[in-house]
Amino acid sequence: MTLATIPRYDRSRVDEIGDHAVVVGASMAGLVTASVLADAFTTVTIIDRDQLPPDPDTRRGVPQAIHPHALLSAGRATIEDLLPGCTEDVISAGGVITDFSSDVHFYDEGGFLANGPTRTETISVSRPVFEHVVRERVSGIDNVDIRSNCHCADYLLDDGGTTVEGVRIRQDGKRSELRADVVVDATGRASRTPAWLENHGYTPPAVDEVQIDMAYSTTFVERPADDRRTYLCPPASPRTRGGMAAPIDGDRWIVNLQGIHDETPPTDRKGFVEYAASLPVPQLKQLLDEHRWATTDIEYYPFPSNRRYRYEALDRFPDGLLVVGDAIASFNPVYAQGMSVAALEALVLHHRLADGRDDLARRFFERVAPTVDIAWNLAVGADFGFSQTEGPKPRGTAFFNWYLGRLLRGAQTDGVLTDAFVRVLMMERPPTTLLRPGILRRVLTPRWRPGGSEQTRLPDHQQEQPSSTGGR
Ligand SMILES: Cc1cc2nc3c(=O)[nH]c(=O)nc-3n(C[C@H](O)[C@H](O)[C@H](O)COP(=O)(O)OP(=O)(O)OC[C@H]3O[C@@H](n4cnc5c(N)ncnc54)[C@H](O)[C@@H]3O)c2cc1C
Image 1 (spheres, rainbow, N blue to C red):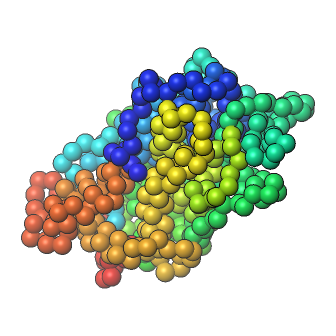
Image 2: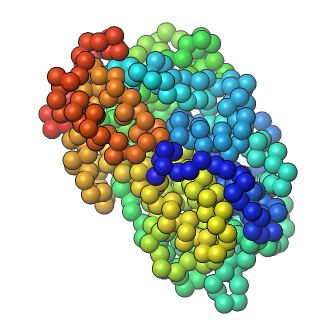
Protein backbone atom coordinates (compact mmCIF):
# COMPACT_ATOMS: atom_id res chain seq x y z
CA MET A 1 0.00 0.00 0.00
CA THR A 2 1.13 3.55 -0.70
CA LEU A 3 0.08 7.02 0.36
CA ALA A 4 -2.81 6.88 -2.13
CA THR A 5 -4.21 3.65 -0.70
CA ILE A 6 -3.89 4.14 3.08
CA PRO A 7 -6.63 6.35 4.57
CA ARG A 8 -5.38 9.63 5.99
CA TYR A 9 -4.50 10.14 9.66
CA ASP A 10 -7.55 11.06 11.73
CA ARG A 11 -6.87 11.40 15.42
CA SER A 12 -10.57 11.37 16.29
CA ARG A 13 -10.82 7.71 15.22
CA VAL A 14 -8.63 6.50 18.10
CA ASP A 15 -9.82 6.03 21.71
CA GLU A 16 -7.59 5.39 24.69
CA ILE A 17 -6.93 1.64 24.84
CA GLY A 18 -4.22 1.33 27.49
CA ASP A 19 -2.08 2.99 30.14
CA HIS A 20 1.46 2.72 28.89
CA ALA A 21 3.34 1.97 25.68
CA VAL A 22 7.13 1.68 25.46
CA VAL A 23 9.00 2.27 22.21
CA VAL A 24 12.57 0.95 22.09
CA GLY A 25 14.62 3.17 19.76
CA ALA A 26 14.28 6.93 19.31
CA SER A 27 15.29 7.07 15.66
CA MET A 28 12.85 7.81 12.84
CA ALA A 29 10.68 4.69 13.15
CA GLY A 30 10.48 4.94 16.95
CA LEU A 31 9.55 8.62 16.85
CA VAL A 32 6.76 8.39 14.28
CA THR A 33 5.39 5.25 15.94
CA ALA A 34 5.31 6.99 19.33
CA SER A 35 3.36 9.86 17.81
CA VAL A 36 0.46 7.56 16.85
CA LEU A 37 0.66 5.53 20.09
CA ALA A 38 0.21 8.79 22.01
CA ASP A 39 -3.41 8.91 20.78
CA ALA A 40 -4.16 5.49 22.26
CA PHE A 41 -2.18 5.25 25.52
CA THR A 42 -2.15 7.46 28.60
CA THR A 43 1.66 7.62 28.47
CA VAL A 44 4.23 6.68 25.86
CA THR A 45 7.89 6.24 26.84
CA ILE A 46 10.56 6.17 24.14
CA ILE A 47 13.90 4.81 25.28
CA ASP A 48 17.22 4.97 23.45
CA ARG A 49 20.60 3.71 24.53
CA ASP A 50 22.29 6.79 23.03
CA GLN A 51 22.66 10.14 24.71
CA LEU A 52 20.27 11.97 22.37
CA PRO A 53 21.96 15.26 21.38
CA PRO A 54 20.26 18.58 22.31
CA ASP A 55 21.10 19.97 18.84
CA PRO A 56 21.20 18.33 15.41
CA ASP A 57 24.16 15.96 15.50
CA THR A 58 25.23 12.49 14.50
CA ARG A 59 25.22 9.79 17.18
CA ARG A 60 26.50 6.26 17.64
CA GLY A 61 23.15 4.45 17.30
CA VAL A 62 22.46 5.89 13.84
CA PRO A 63 25.84 5.69 12.08
CA GLN A 64 24.18 6.10 8.67
CA ALA A 65 23.04 9.63 9.56
CA ILE A 66 26.05 11.39 7.99
CA HIS A 67 25.02 9.99 4.59
CA PRO A 68 22.26 11.37 2.37
CA HIS A 69 18.73 10.79 3.63
CA ALA A 70 16.17 11.77 1.03
CA LEU A 71 12.59 11.89 2.23
CA LEU A 72 10.10 10.61 -0.34
CA SER A 73 7.00 12.74 -0.83
CA ALA A 74 4.82 9.99 0.73
CA GLY A 75 6.97 10.16 3.87
CA ARG A 76 6.91 13.93 3.96
CA ALA A 77 3.11 14.12 3.61
CA THR A 78 2.58 11.42 6.24
CA ILE A 79 4.96 12.95 8.77
CA GLU A 80 3.38 16.37 8.22
CA ASP A 81 -0.05 14.84 8.97
CA LEU A 82 1.21 13.06 12.08
CA LEU A 83 3.31 15.96 13.32
CA PRO A 84 1.97 19.20 11.82
CA GLY A 85 4.62 21.90 11.43
CA CYS A 86 7.59 19.60 10.74
CA THR A 87 8.04 20.92 7.20
CA GLU A 88 8.16 24.53 8.44
CA ASP A 89 10.64 23.54 11.13
CA VAL A 90 12.87 21.82 8.58
CA ILE A 91 12.83 24.89 6.34
CA SER A 92 13.62 27.13 9.33
CA ALA A 93 16.56 24.86 10.11
CA GLY A 94 17.96 25.37 6.60
CA GLY A 95 16.25 22.50 4.75
CA VAL A 96 15.36 23.05 1.11
CA ILE A 97 12.08 22.34 -0.67
CA THR A 98 12.87 20.72 -4.00
CA ASP A 99 10.53 19.95 -6.86
CA PHE A 100 11.31 16.70 -8.61
CA SER A 101 10.16 18.03 -11.95
CA SER A 102 12.38 21.13 -12.04
CA ASP A 103 15.19 20.78 -9.46
CA VAL A 104 15.98 17.08 -9.68
CA HIS A 105 18.03 15.73 -12.59
CA PHE A 106 17.58 11.97 -12.62
CA TYR A 107 19.81 9.91 -14.86
CA ASP A 108 18.90 6.37 -15.80
CA GLU A 109 18.91 4.17 -18.91
CA GLY A 110 21.43 6.38 -20.64
CA GLY A 111 19.85 9.79 -20.21
CA PHE A 112 18.22 12.35 -17.92
CA LEU A 113 14.48 12.13 -17.47
CA ALA A 114 12.40 14.93 -19.01
CA ASN A 115 10.62 17.34 -16.69
CA GLY A 116 7.23 16.08 -15.54
CA PRO A 117 4.10 18.22 -15.98
CA THR A 118 3.24 18.45 -12.26
CA ARG A 119 5.12 19.44 -9.13
CA THR A 120 6.32 16.75 -6.71
CA GLU A 121 7.76 18.54 -3.74
CA THR A 122 9.92 17.07 -1.07
CA ILE A 123 12.32 18.41 1.52
CA SER A 124 16.05 18.04 1.24
CA VAL A 125 17.92 18.26 4.52
CA SER A 126 20.64 16.46 6.43
CA ARG A 127 19.47 13.48 8.46
CA PRO A 128 20.63 14.89 11.85
CA VAL A 129 18.53 18.03 11.29
CA PHE A 130 15.50 16.05 10.17
CA GLU A 131 15.70 13.63 13.10
CA HIS A 132 16.15 16.56 15.48
CA VAL A 133 13.07 18.36 14.12
CA VAL A 134 10.93 15.22 14.40
CA ARG A 135 12.28 14.46 17.89
CA GLU A 136 11.47 18.00 19.04
CA ARG A 137 7.91 17.69 17.74
CA VAL A 138 7.42 14.29 19.37
CA SER A 139 8.92 15.41 22.67
CA GLY A 140 6.40 18.28 22.57
CA ILE A 141 3.48 15.81 22.76
CA ASP A 142 2.19 16.06 26.33
CA ASN A 143 2.04 12.34 27.10
CA VAL A 144 5.32 11.32 25.46
CA ASP A 145 8.52 10.96 27.46
CA ILE A 146 11.90 10.37 25.76
CA ARG A 147 14.71 8.82 27.79
CA SER A 148 18.35 8.95 26.71
CA ASN A 149 21.06 6.51 27.83
CA CYS A 150 18.39 3.92 28.47
CA HIS A 151 19.32 0.50 27.13
CA CYS A 152 16.65 -2.17 26.62
CA ALA A 153 18.23 -5.37 27.92
CA ASP A 154 15.24 -7.70 27.53
CA TYR A 155 11.48 -7.92 27.14
CA LEU A 156 9.41 -8.90 30.19
CA LEU A 157 7.29 -11.96 29.44
CA ASP A 158 4.34 -13.12 31.56
CA ASP A 159 4.40 -16.49 33.35
CA GLY A 160 2.44 -18.16 30.56
CA GLY A 161 5.02 -16.99 28.02
CA THR A 162 2.34 -15.47 25.80
CA THR A 163 2.38 -11.75 26.57
CA VAL A 164 5.13 -9.14 26.66
CA GLU A 165 4.48 -6.95 29.68
CA GLY A 166 7.30 -4.43 29.48
CA VAL A 167 11.07 -4.13 29.20
CA ARG A 168 14.09 -4.64 31.41
CA ILE A 169 16.27 -1.54 31.16
CA ARG A 170 19.71 -0.32 32.13
CA GLN A 171 19.95 3.41 32.70
CA ASP A 172 22.86 5.28 34.29
CA GLY A 173 24.32 2.00 35.51
CA LYS A 174 21.08 0.97 37.24
CA ARG A 175 18.82 -1.90 36.23
CA SER A 176 15.05 -1.61 36.44
CA GLU A 177 11.82 -2.53 34.71
CA LEU A 178 9.29 -0.53 32.72
CA ARG A 179 5.84 -2.15 32.71
CA ALA A 180 3.81 -1.57 29.54
CA ASP A 181 0.69 -2.73 27.72
CA VAL A 182 2.54 -2.59 24.43
CA VAL A 183 6.27 -2.69 23.64
CA VAL A 184 7.49 -1.64 20.18
CA ASP A 185 10.83 -2.76 18.79
CA ALA A 186 12.20 0.16 16.75
CA THR A 187 15.86 -0.81 17.21
CA GLY A 188 16.66 -0.95 13.51
CA ARG A 189 18.38 -3.48 11.31
CA ALA A 190 20.24 -5.11 14.22
CA SER A 191 16.98 -5.88 16.06
CA ARG A 192 17.29 -8.76 18.55
CA THR A 193 13.60 -9.71 18.37
CA PRO A 194 14.09 -12.69 15.99
CA ALA A 195 16.70 -14.20 18.35
CA TRP A 196 14.57 -13.37 21.41
CA LEU A 197 11.56 -15.14 19.90
CA GLU A 198 13.65 -18.25 19.28
CA ASN A 199 15.06 -18.19 22.83
CA HIS A 200 11.53 -18.08 24.22
CA GLY A 201 10.08 -20.98 22.28
CA TYR A 202 8.64 -19.05 19.35
CA THR A 203 9.45 -19.68 15.72
CA PRO A 204 11.49 -16.69 14.52
CA PRO A 205 10.33 -14.97 11.35
CA ALA A 206 11.69 -16.20 8.04
CA VAL A 207 14.19 -13.74 6.60
CA ASP A 208 14.63 -12.72 2.97
CA GLU A 209 18.15 -11.48 2.31
CA VAL A 210 19.15 -10.06 -1.06
CA GLN A 211 22.91 -9.61 -1.26
CA ILE A 212 24.13 -6.43 -3.01
CA ASP A 213 27.42 -5.47 -1.30
CA MET A 214 26.69 -1.78 -1.61
CA ALA A 215 28.97 0.98 -0.30
CA TYR A 216 28.64 4.75 0.15
CA SER A 217 31.27 7.50 0.39
CA THR A 218 30.00 10.95 1.30
CA THR A 219 31.32 14.48 1.59
CA PHE A 220 29.96 18.05 1.55
CA VAL A 221 30.65 21.10 -0.63
CA GLU A 222 29.49 24.68 -0.26
CA ARG A 223 26.39 25.78 -2.17
CA PRO A 224 24.95 29.17 -3.20
CA ALA A 225 21.81 29.57 -1.07
CA ASP A 226 19.37 29.66 -3.99
CA ASP A 227 20.88 26.76 -5.97
CA ARG A 228 18.63 23.72 -5.51
CA ARG A 229 20.08 21.48 -8.19
CA THR A 230 19.90 17.80 -7.30
CA TYR A 231 21.58 15.05 -9.32
CA LEU A 232 20.71 11.39 -9.06
CA CYS A 233 22.64 8.77 -10.99
CA PRO A 234 22.14 5.44 -9.21
CA PRO A 235 24.14 2.38 -10.25
CA ALA A 236 22.32 0.59 -13.07
CA SER A 237 23.46 -2.66 -14.63
CA PRO A 238 26.08 -3.13 -15.94
CA ARG A 239 27.40 0.12 -14.39
CA THR A 240 28.29 -0.66 -10.77
CA ARG A 241 29.13 2.96 -9.91
CA GLY A 242 26.67 5.70 -9.07
CA GLY A 243 26.43 9.01 -7.29
CA MET A 244 24.19 11.83 -6.20
CA ALA A 245 24.26 15.38 -4.92
CA ALA A 246 21.49 17.13 -3.03
CA PRO A 247 21.12 20.58 -1.47
CA ILE A 248 20.93 20.53 2.32
CA ASP A 249 21.03 22.84 5.34
CA GLY A 250 24.11 24.95 5.96
CA ASP A 251 24.13 26.04 2.28
CA ARG A 252 25.82 22.78 1.35
CA TRP A 253 25.46 20.01 -1.16
CA ILE A 254 25.85 16.51 0.19
CA VAL A 255 27.80 14.60 -2.44
CA ASN A 256 27.66 10.85 -2.29
CA LEU A 257 29.32 8.19 -4.41
CA GLN A 258 27.97 4.67 -4.53
CA GLY A 259 29.31 1.30 -5.52
CA ILE A 260 27.41 -1.95 -5.78
CA HIS A 261 28.71 -5.53 -5.87
CA ASP A 262 32.05 -4.81 -4.26
CA GLU A 263 32.70 -1.59 -6.16
CA THR A 264 34.25 0.61 -3.47
CA PRO A 265 33.92 4.41 -3.67
CA PRO A 266 37.14 5.96 -2.34
CA THR A 267 37.56 7.99 0.84
CA ASP A 268 40.55 10.07 -0.26
CA ARG A 269 39.92 13.36 -2.05
CA LYS A 270 41.81 12.56 -5.26
CA GLY A 271 40.18 9.12 -5.59
CA PHE A 272 36.76 10.59 -4.79
CA VAL A 273 37.05 13.17 -7.60
CA GLU A 274 38.33 10.55 -10.06
CA TYR A 275 35.46 8.23 -9.18
CA ALA A 276 32.96 11.08 -9.70
CA ALA A 277 34.60 11.77 -13.08
CA SER A 278 34.02 8.16 -14.11
CA LEU A 279 30.22 8.54 -13.86
CA PRO A 280 28.19 9.16 -17.01
CA VAL A 281 27.04 12.56 -15.64
CA PRO A 282 29.76 15.24 -15.45
CA GLN A 283 27.85 17.41 -12.97
CA LEU A 284 29.03 15.69 -9.79
CA LYS A 285 32.67 16.20 -10.66
CA GLN A 286 31.87 19.79 -11.66
CA LEU A 287 30.34 20.45 -8.24
CA LEU A 288 33.46 19.04 -6.59
CA ASP A 289 35.77 21.10 -8.84
CA GLU A 290 33.88 24.39 -8.80
CA HIS A 291 32.80 24.68 -5.18
CA ARG A 292 34.78 24.86 -1.99
CA TRP A 293 34.66 21.66 0.04
CA ALA A 294 32.87 22.17 3.34
CA THR A 295 34.95 19.45 5.03
CA THR A 296 38.05 17.38 4.45
CA ASP A 297 36.25 14.27 5.68
CA ILE A 298 34.87 11.61 3.38
CA GLU A 299 32.71 9.12 5.27
CA TYR A 300 32.32 5.48 4.25
CA TYR A 301 29.42 3.10 4.88
CA PRO A 302 29.05 -0.49 3.70
CA PHE A 303 25.56 -1.95 3.24
CA PRO A 304 25.70 -5.66 2.46
CA SER A 305 22.11 -6.66 1.79
CA ASN A 306 18.43 -5.85 1.61
CA ARG A 307 16.89 -7.71 4.56
CA ARG A 308 13.26 -8.41 5.35
CA TYR A 309 11.74 -10.35 8.25
CA ARG A 310 8.42 -12.00 7.43
CA TYR A 311 6.55 -11.27 10.68
CA GLU A 312 3.26 -11.37 8.78
CA ALA A 313 3.74 -15.10 8.11
CA LEU A 314 4.14 -16.16 11.76
CA ASP A 315 1.41 -18.34 13.30
CA ARG A 316 2.39 -17.47 16.88
CA PHE A 317 3.60 -14.13 18.22
CA PRO A 318 3.45 -12.77 21.77
CA ASP A 319 0.70 -10.31 22.62
CA GLY A 320 1.91 -6.85 23.56
CA LEU A 321 4.86 -6.75 21.16
CA LEU A 322 5.21 -4.95 17.81
CA VAL A 323 8.14 -4.49 15.44
CA VAL A 324 8.55 -1.47 13.11
CA GLY A 325 10.94 0.24 10.69
CA ASP A 326 14.29 -1.24 9.74
CA ALA A 327 13.69 -3.98 12.31
CA ILE A 328 11.12 -5.34 9.84
CA ALA A 329 12.90 -4.47 6.59
CA SER A 330 15.93 -2.50 5.48
CA PHE A 331 16.39 -1.62 1.83
CA ASN A 332 19.23 -0.63 -0.48
CA PRO A 333 19.60 3.01 0.66
CA VAL A 334 19.92 4.27 -2.92
CA TYR A 335 16.11 4.12 -3.17
CA ALA A 336 15.68 6.29 -0.05
CA GLN A 337 12.72 4.33 1.31
CA GLY A 338 13.45 3.57 4.98
CA MET A 339 12.10 6.71 6.70
CA SER A 340 9.06 6.90 4.43
CA VAL A 341 8.21 3.23 4.94
CA ALA A 342 8.50 3.82 8.70
CA ALA A 343 6.07 6.76 8.39
CA LEU A 344 3.59 4.74 6.34
CA GLU A 345 3.87 1.90 8.89
CA ALA A 346 2.98 4.38 11.64
CA LEU A 347 -0.06 5.41 9.61
CA VAL A 348 -1.08 1.76 9.26
CA LEU A 349 -0.64 1.32 13.02
CA HIS A 350 -2.83 4.36 13.66
CA HIS A 351 -5.70 2.66 11.80
CA ARG A 352 -5.15 -0.63 13.63
CA LEU A 353 -5.20 1.18 16.99
CA ALA A 354 -8.57 2.61 16.02
CA ASP A 355 -9.87 -0.98 16.17
CA GLY A 356 -8.59 -1.59 19.73
CA ARG A 357 -5.85 -3.70 21.28
CA ASP A 358 -7.09 -7.21 20.56
CA ASP A 359 -4.83 -9.16 18.26
CA LEU A 360 -2.95 -5.92 17.52
CA ALA A 361 0.32 -7.48 16.34
CA ARG A 362 -1.30 -9.89 13.85
CA ARG A 363 -3.54 -7.15 12.47
CA PHE A 364 -0.60 -4.74 12.21
CA PHE A 365 1.84 -7.14 10.53
CA GLU A 366 -0.84 -8.31 8.11
CA ARG A 367 -1.69 -4.76 6.98
CA VAL A 368 1.86 -3.46 6.97
CA ALA A 369 3.12 -6.24 4.69
CA PRO A 370 1.62 -4.76 1.48
CA THR A 371 3.42 -1.45 2.16
CA VAL A 372 6.72 -3.22 2.79
CA ASP A 373 6.05 -5.36 -0.32
CA ILE A 374 5.93 -2.30 -2.54
CA ALA A 375 9.18 -0.83 -1.23
CA TRP A 376 10.85 -4.24 -1.20
CA ASN A 377 9.83 -5.18 -4.73
CA LEU A 378 10.97 -1.82 -6.10
CA ALA A 379 14.33 -1.99 -4.33
CA VAL A 380 15.30 -5.62 -4.82
CA GLY A 381 13.61 -5.68 -8.22
CA ALA A 382 15.98 -2.97 -9.42
CA ASP A 383 18.91 -4.68 -7.68
CA PHE A 384 18.17 -7.87 -9.61
CA GLY A 385 18.98 -5.87 -12.76
CA PHE A 386 22.54 -6.89 -11.78
CA SER A 387 23.33 -10.54 -12.54
CA GLN A 388 25.55 -10.61 -9.40
CA THR A 389 22.57 -9.98 -7.07
CA GLU A 390 21.72 -13.06 -5.03
CA GLY A 391 18.66 -13.98 -3.01
CA PRO A 392 14.95 -14.62 -3.37
CA LYS A 393 13.71 -12.81 -6.48
CA PRO A 394 10.14 -11.44 -6.33
CA ARG A 395 7.81 -12.88 -8.93
CA GLY A 396 7.48 -10.68 -12.02
CA THR A 397 10.89 -9.00 -11.56
CA ALA A 398 12.16 -9.76 -15.07
CA PHE A 399 9.02 -8.35 -16.71
CA PHE A 400 8.92 -5.32 -14.42
CA ASN A 401 12.57 -4.50 -15.11
CA TRP A 402 12.07 -4.87 -18.85
CA TYR A 403 9.01 -2.62 -18.73
CA LEU A 404 10.57 -0.06 -16.40
CA GLY A 405 13.70 0.14 -18.58
CA ARG A 406 11.47 0.92 -21.55
CA LEU A 407 9.44 3.42 -19.54
CA LEU A 408 12.57 5.23 -18.35
CA ARG A 409 13.95 5.48 -21.86
CA GLY A 410 10.60 6.92 -22.92
CA ALA A 411 10.66 9.30 -19.95
CA GLN A 412 13.78 10.93 -21.35
CA THR A 413 11.53 12.71 -23.84
CA ASP A 414 8.07 12.27 -22.31
CA GLY A 415 7.43 14.13 -19.05
CA VAL A 416 4.14 12.28 -18.53
CA LEU A 417 6.15 9.07 -18.11
CA THR A 418 8.57 10.86 -15.75
CA ASP A 419 5.62 11.96 -13.66
CA ALA A 420 4.13 8.46 -13.52
CA PHE A 421 7.50 6.99 -12.52
CA VAL A 422 8.22 9.64 -9.88
CA ARG A 423 4.83 9.10 -8.17
CA VAL A 424 5.71 5.42 -7.80
CA LEU A 425 9.30 6.09 -6.73
CA MET A 426 7.97 8.52 -4.10
CA MET A 427 5.57 5.84 -2.80
CA GLU A 428 2.60 8.07 -3.56
CA ARG A 429 1.05 5.56 -5.95
CA PRO A 430 1.38 1.80 -6.42
CA PRO A 431 3.57 0.41 -9.23
CA THR A 432 0.45 -0.98 -10.92
CA THR A 433 -0.36 2.61 -11.96
CA LEU A 434 2.53 2.31 -14.44
CA LEU A 435 0.40 -0.22 -16.31
CA ARG A 436 -2.62 2.06 -16.71
CA PRO A 437 -3.69 2.25 -20.36
CA GLY A 438 -2.55 5.87 -20.86
CA ILE A 439 0.94 5.03 -19.59
CA LEU A 440 1.16 1.60 -21.20
CA ARG A 441 0.37 3.12 -24.60
CA ARG A 442 3.12 5.74 -24.23
CA VAL A 443 5.64 3.09 -23.11
CA LEU A 444 4.88 0.53 -25.80
CA THR A 445 4.06 2.84 -28.70
CA PRO A 446 6.72 5.55 -28.96
CA ARG A 447 4.65 7.54 -31.49
CA TRP A 448 2.38 8.51 -28.60
CA ARG A 449 5.27 10.30 -27.02
CA PRO A 450 5.75 13.99 -27.59
CA GLY A 451 9.54 13.69 -28.30
CA GLY A 452 11.15 17.11 -28.26
CA SER A 453 8.26 18.97 -26.63
CA GLU A 454 8.92 21.86 -24.26
CA GLN A 455 8.80 19.37 -21.38
CA THR A 456 11.97 17.80 -22.66
CA ARG A 457 15.22 18.54 -20.86
CA LEU A 458 18.06 17.79 -23.26
CA PRO A 459 20.87 16.00 -21.46
CA ASP A 460 24.14 17.90 -21.67
CA HIS A 461 26.26 15.01 -20.52
CA GLN A 462 28.19 12.20 -22.01
CA GLN A 463 25.69 9.58 -23.22
CA GLU A 464 25.64 6.06 -21.95
CA GLN A 465 24.37 3.24 -24.15
CA PRO A 466 21.01 1.93 -22.91
CA SER A 467 21.22 -1.78 -22.17
CA SER A 468 19.81 -3.79 -25.06
CA THR A 469 17.72 -6.03 -22.81
CA GLY A 470 16.18 -3.14 -20.93
CA GLY A 471 17.53 -4.62 -17.67
CA ARG A 472 18.23 -1.93 -15.11
C1 LIG B 1 23.77 4.53 4.35
C2 LIG B 1 22.27 4.65 4.52
C3 LIG B 1 21.58 5.65 3.84
C4 LIG B 1 20.19 5.75 3.98
N1 LIG B 1 19.52 6.67 3.23
C5 LIG B 1 18.18 6.79 3.38
C6 LIG B 1 17.45 7.75 2.62
O1 LIG B 1 17.98 8.44 1.74
N2 LIG B 1 16.11 7.87 2.87
C7 LIG B 1 15.47 7.08 3.78
O2 LIG B 1 14.25 7.23 3.97
N3 LIG B 1 16.14 6.14 4.48
C8 LIG B 1 17.46 5.98 4.31
N4 LIG B 1 18.13 5.03 5.02
C9 LIG B 1 17.37 4.20 5.99
C10 LIG B 1 17.12 4.97 7.28
O3 LIG B 1 18.35 5.32 7.90
C11 LIG B 1 16.26 4.12 8.24
O4 LIG B 1 15.23 3.50 7.53
C12 LIG B 1 15.65 5.00 9.31
O5 LIG B 1 16.63 5.50 10.18
C13 LIG B 1 14.62 4.25 10.18
O6 LIG B 1 15.27 3.28 10.87
P1 LIG B 1 14.83 2.81 12.32
O7 LIG B 1 14.31 3.96 13.10
O8 LIG B 1 13.95 1.63 12.14
O9 LIG B 1 16.21 2.29 12.94
P2 LIG B 1 17.57 3.05 13.19
O10 LIG B 1 17.61 4.34 12.47
O11 LIG B 1 18.66 2.07 12.93
O12 LIG B 1 17.54 3.39 14.75
C14 LIG B 1 17.55 2.42 15.76
C15 LIG B 1 17.56 3.13 17.10
O13 LIG B 1 17.44 2.16 18.14
C16 LIG B 1 18.37 2.46 19.18
N5 LIG B 1 18.65 1.19 19.85
C17 LIG B 1 19.17 0.08 19.30
N6 LIG B 1 19.23 -0.91 20.22
C18 LIG B 1 18.73 -0.41 21.36
C19 LIG B 1 18.52 -0.95 22.68
N7 LIG B 1 18.82 -2.23 22.98
N8 LIG B 1 18.00 -0.14 23.65
C20 LIG B 1 17.67 1.15 23.37
N9 LIG B 1 17.85 1.69 22.15
C21 LIG B 1 18.36 0.93 21.16
C22 LIG B 1 19.54 3.10 18.45
O14 LIG B 1 20.34 3.90 19.29
C23 LIG B 1 18.82 3.92 17.37
O15 LIG B 1 18.47 5.19 17.86
C24 LIG B 1 19.50 4.87 4.86
C25 LIG B 1 20.20 3.87 5.54
C26 LIG B 1 21.57 3.75 5.35
C27 LIG B 1 22.29 2.63 6.05
